[in-house]
Length: 210
Image (cartoon, rainbow, N blue to C red; front, side):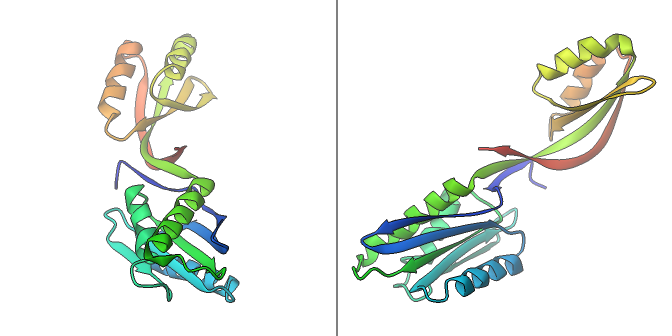
């Protein structure tokens, strides 16, 4: 698993008009090629009367799945520019479809490349980009005498205090970035004079707005 990576929030769209042609950028987070193809098909069905529905997607930790489709535009002027924006922004598990309603004015190869790139960038910005950070959960159990000290230190630390459970002893649920587990444990042992029980829980991705 990657310690962190960038992707889109969920699903969104935006639209720009260039030389009377409407360009509508549709964006969606996808985890498989089947999901990406289903999204492309959905947009094509929704905009069946459009001149073109050009698409690109990039999937997988190592970006092993990369596809681009010009859908009738001159070769290399639509799908590839969309894909290049995804690469430049280093976005994983992301699919984009740019719908074009032709306005009667030809843009030329350079104009098309700029139009599809700009629409993609704007649609991504509108949808929102997140950093998915792999986090390790720790449960720290201590005597109530340490409650104030630990809560204050944790809230002012680089670690994420998720929850405090008030039971027989106080239990702190803390998220620690992958790779920083040892440093956190040593810090907690020092902070509590080794008077706390520290247990590692599961790991999961947390999303941070970019």
